Image (cartoon, rainbow, N blue to C red; front, side, top):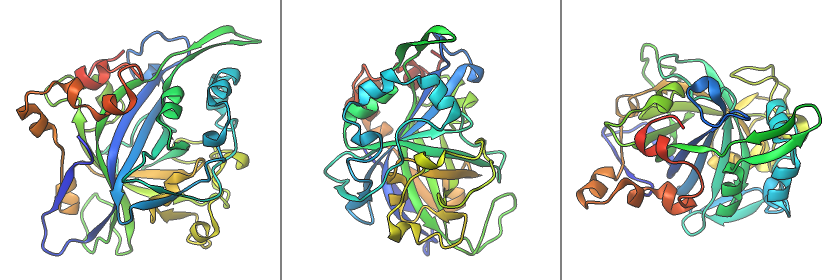
Length: 341
């Protein structure tokens, strides 16, 4: 699949693409649930962004020794911590990302492991409602992310033996982060003459025509456009968008001075540059903008599924999720068949 391609459908576009890449969606059933049968059985919805190109071949990320990436025994950290309680309080774990390191995203994998607070994406029919999320882990090591997707067995003093299930793959596609200046007023769509940033995506899997029960329940549309705003870690904010006041201070990102300075005294800032998302503990808001990317942004986002199908390849052979993480990283029935597991 790769990062796909795009074409602008207006002579004078009002957009500027900052980053291109692949997007993967996973959900994890609740503790002690063998299978999820609906959204009420879901513990977490995860997004994984893998940037592959952009305005610059190098992106700035947190120092390799910071956050979860820098933990010497990452697997031990996940197994020795009461993961259920830590995730529910959204305040434990290691400190946020800090420092600075350059990564060539065209030559080295850069993976952002993201948690959505409401366990779903914003509903494209409910524009204007913010959904909170945060970057749980940033790494260049694929094995780190595979470990984060795995479940675990653990003991608690009050509830005894607990089982946290493995995550399930539920979506794969391409994404863009772009700057947009909208000088028109469109009914029902947030607009401003000021520059803002969008996260847009288009699914390749599940293939069209398959059931999409988990995707529909988790608001993972076949394509969508969201406004994305980065939250200022140095300003206390009231809970909104599915979070109870956000991450604890020690888990918030510590951005380098040149990134932190972009906020000024503002509570939020556009995802410009996307480097903000390369720091663990980066908190952001997604606000639904549209479910038709071309109509909203005059941009036709293309996937490579048709080309792969024409070559007679099976879905498992085409999937970059499988190629990247392997077949043992997560159950893929929701991804290829659109059914709950």
